[in-house]
Length: 500
Picture 1 (tube, rainbow, N blue to C red):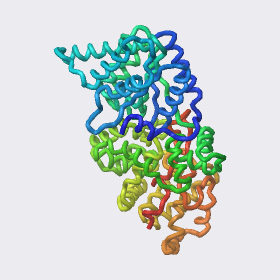
Picture 2 (picture 1 turned 45 degrees about the horizontal axis):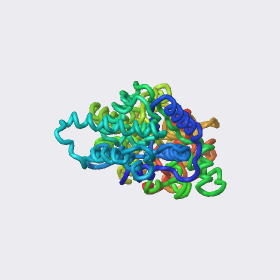
Picture 3 (picture 1 turned 180 degrees about the horizontal axis):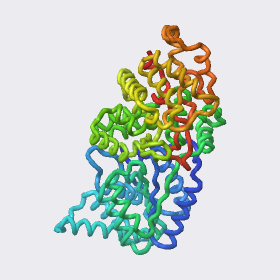
Picture 4 (picture 1 turned 180 degrees about the vertical axis):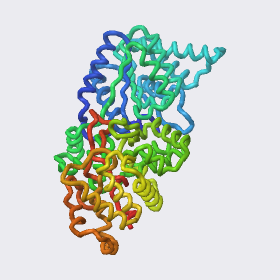
């Protein structure tokens, strides 16, 4: 898969929505580079948030304004990144379409640099170090000539997959090119830059002419416009709410969910592959720990996860550090959670990880969570009011309907008329009523009054029956302004595949 194909795979379709401020910032940066010498702006954001779409819109407008535009990108390769691949791709675009007329010998110079970058021309008697310095110098002179002849926009996407040689060239270019109307636009995944790029970013941050642009998720209003563009007309507000709640404003995620239809509950195949590709970068032990965390819900307290996982402390810390380092989990501030906790960076990551478990594994892990919570003081859970409801949900999905019924009644009795509390896993009250609908034997064997059971259906903020966990808001996600989104129930997407 080429870089362009890789970027297009995650580029949302439909109208260009919600990026007008960022687009203005890119144009302002281009004007500064045209007036004051070479510069670079790095566009950061999570996968699917629309980096390629924004840069493509900007590049198209710049080209129409008679700016030379060369676009390249890195690609994930199993054998490791190819040296200089993003630069080679960008320079080939220039060689085919955009070399300005009137520059004597520029075509031959460009062809010579391409040959050296691809290894088609031998370096002769030069040592590797001298050959590299010579190549960097030739590339710098070439780009300088082009940028003096016409404004030049060099776009290099997906730098989180780039090789060290490409990153070294960019740093060299910014340090040594004294003049020329050149702007380099790079993009990378802020939630998973990788060790190589992370170290490079720390170095170039100190260079003059380098700036950053963080791309947030879409707001609900912006997502409404995106869905209307995809459909070609207005979209029902309930559909918008469902798609926004699950996608949390990620444009690519929203598009995939919308295409399969809101309310279906499952994950589209393409979206599932994108999410699980991130999970499978972890070690086998790290993957299993992430799945254990997914059973708890969107976020889980450290002590609770440690008790259920049953791993030695060093092994637990290693697995959590791996998941946090890869951007799959984020550490939740203690003031938000009540104690140390970990939150899935995106709710759909939790759904995908949960979906990897077999039904029997899910039931056993739900039973383990229920057992730990039932035998521990309420302080193990950050919100005591949610404690009975969460226990009911875990017991129900552990195929223990009698215990689920007992804890559901306690949840109904203790919730009162107030709003659903924040934090922890969502209070899935209608889901906890599942055994009441399905297991009449358990209901007959329970001494609780039927009136207590009926109260479960009328608790404020309850989701509609059969769609557990769409009620309570969880802690603010990493989107724009800490925007709050509906939190999935502890078991991920609503389904009955492992119901009793």
